[in-house]
Length: 276
Image (cartoon, rainbow, N blue to C red; front, side, top):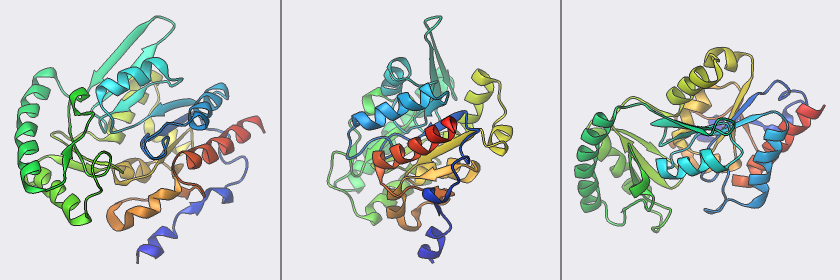
């Protein structure tokens, strides 16, 4: 059954050269999409610059924390960044030297939810041997990231499921990335904050942008499912195939290469279409 589902993804090589010609925005996951084995290599970063030079607004949409996203928005050649699985967007206006930080929750809500997440943290660590708090947790504003693969030996699938169950029993949302289980209180996700970002900053309706194929999203894991499901131009790097049936929605296209090499494969296709 899963093999039949995987077969619904079209190889990126099957897209016509002009398929990506109308793109204005590329939304991209970071971990294991832009990175490979935890590193951002020069070719992937250069591809972001190449896309920007071709007139594409690149926007990382990631589960990574606010502290990281502050740096990314300020120093990378990107239009903005959506972080902590849709908890906020950050945007640096270089021309006016203004930094915008827009959250889905008020500061009071974030503080109250943090107290509840701290209780969950202790419960999960006590109940799931080998799980750890993500090393980037001190830089997070909204969610709790439990490490199951980044800086700890990879946990078994049943242990990962147990982490998810702890979050869900407490009424929190839980999403599995390629390295963490992220949990938070609230209804936001990557898609809802991307919608708000397009509206606020670019005066663009996300439904119109998707129908006119102005946007594409590229990712690799279950927490990217809302984006895979929504965008007509949704792309998975080849390692998406490793998540079995834990990914609720799959992309329409899949690259031949994995991780950052897959991102570069997609980027080359987009740049070629813009030049054609």
